[in-house]
Amino acid sequence: MLFPYKDDNPTKSFPFVTIIFIGINVVCFLLTGLAGSNEFVRHLYTYGLIPAELFHGQIINTIPPELIEQGHHMPEVGNLPTFATLFTHMFMHGGLAHLIGNIWFLWLFGDNIEDRMGPLKYIFFYLIAGLVAALCHGLTGTSSVIPMIGASGAISGVIGAYIILYPYARIHTIFFIFVFFYNIKLPAFIFLGLWFIGQVFWGFATLGAEGAGVAFFAHIGGFVAGVLMVKLFIRRKYVRVKGKDGKYYNREVTNYPGNKYMDY
Image 1 (cartoon, rainbow, N blue to C red):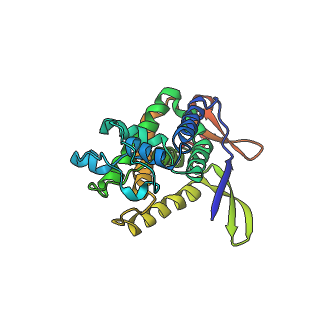
Image 2: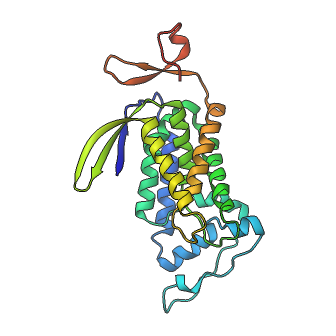
Image 3: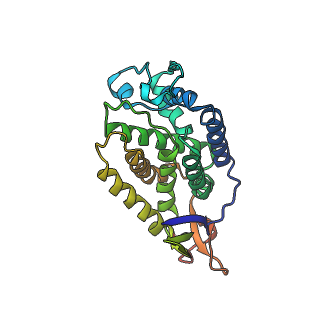
């Protein structure tokens, strides 16, 4: 098991948008995830993305009885337009571990992508990646009535952008083997490449399994979208320069003429 805890990749700007996205996810979790099991299920079917609604126009007005606590009344599903759930699903999470895992990856990699794109472009990039991720998940089971929630599709787009822009950035990682753990540094293309290979493997391994639990194809779709879109959103040309301390820093290309830099 690999757990990343920081990267050697400093930024020039403060990640306001990344922090705002993290804050929205936390607030939404507090409002929905801690509202009680029945209320959470109602929010899940109201704000989650349901492929059958999106692709077949099937309106889900009732919640499966097995999801309701015994002795409690059946909550009503909200009347949110289906297209709106393409975005609202990105800010809901099914549990504390789900939330922490997503916002940790967003905090770790999002600041660098925001730094390269600027706040406004970064917002559009994030939302488009999440939209593509949702569609990719839905296409694997267009008749599914199971809601999908979570920011991981959009964050996968951020990860895809990161591996293109900073393939050699060092990711400080804790490597767990049973009860032993080691602190290692991995280039981003290795760490994130292994992450993506894992998503592809488990995605096809669970393809067609109803209620598989993790929307692997949302991760795959978001990642690929990030890889393909990133160059369209970069606001300025940067190069990666290795400093005297051995770390890599961003510098504008005009400051380093000739072959004194490595151009990513």
